[in-house]
Image (cartoon, rainbow, N blue to C red):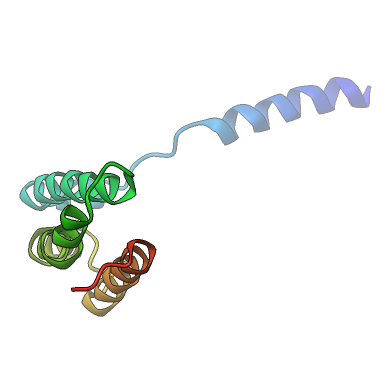
Length: 115
């Protein structure tokens, strides 16, 4: 008898627990489409830079240019402002700059790059 009651109860819990939660309409309407597009484009560029930094085929000159100029410029001028517009309550400017410094320091030490 307990099995007959327990099985449908567990099945019901599994089905309701796996359903997609409704999105918050305020968040989806408030999202700035320009900021979102800017963020996605900048994120793609930064990912390309990170792929180049991880590649053993990238020359030290290219890595130096990416670490000392291209990556910080892209991050500060496009990525960070767009992310702050999209998720201001989740991130601060100082937190994002600290994250940038951590990433740059890691790759500079890894590849022995001096700016």
